[in-house]
Image 1: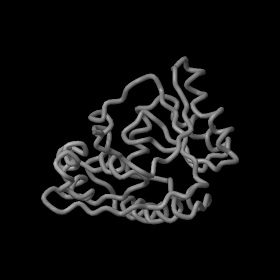
Image 2: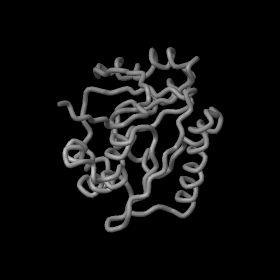
Image 3: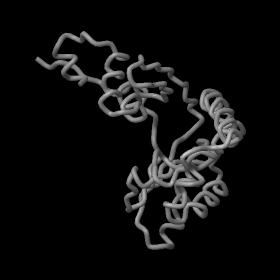
Image 4: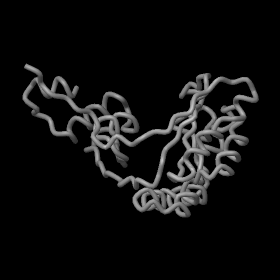
Length: 201
């Protein structure tokens, strides 16, 4: 889409491209950050304009992922979620999302640790990921601010400070090794540029 837009003389803005990509994908979770880079908050309802809001990502927050060598179908991860949630759980997650945006922007580890708590999907989906509770406990013991399921899983995402990141990298996923589940760990950097394209003559 980016290449076609460029070849056509760039008639579509980034927001228009993001809206079109979201319509095709069905949700903005993957295509918006891939297109724009950084940490993006997206509000989308089919038929309405896509609303985008970039959330600053403080350089004191280091993302680390542990990727196990088994698959978890998104359909299966959705199947374990309840059909409805209590008002208290909805309020809990809404408040924590607000805190999360501020924690990411400021690098406040105490806020981040609280903000990563969840009642909407992780308590249900973690049952599909072998050794999740042990990995979570060891990540926090190694100094991570928190551990969450990346998307529908089974990849796990830890957030750590520059000081604790090396220890978290060494520790993250260790219970999988004890269970003979192959996995890899990667310390990541945030791509703030997004998709780049240029015409080469």
